Length: 158
Ligand code: MG
Image (cartoon, rainbow, N blue to C red):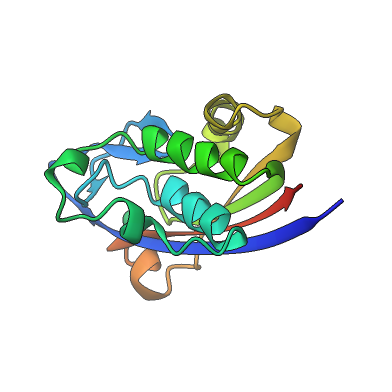
């Protein structure tokens, strides 16, 4: 069996007047993430981790933010496309592990729904999908609630 590892990182700015999407679900919050797509920072980090494992560049290469096709795009569709590319190259998801850094809103009540949604989009078992939430103890841009960052690592199996 061949295995490959990948990691991804992403940041989006928090602003008023935008919806907040994380791991494919919409959260009730006073602020939302700014971006060309729905700005789902966790899915973007996950896509980059999968693409990284395959050495297939990054999400901005495949889905440029200058392309009107991806304006307001549902990031779940981007993740589904990245998973299609993964399978086309003969790989399957072993497991993925995501960390979201956000001061607010509290993500704990939503973790199970996030894992289930990502598993559905990636056509894998929920046990293969870990989503963790942390704060930066009010330090830095995430601590000041200027943005949300996300990290992801994946293991792919051939
Ligand atoms: Mg992004």
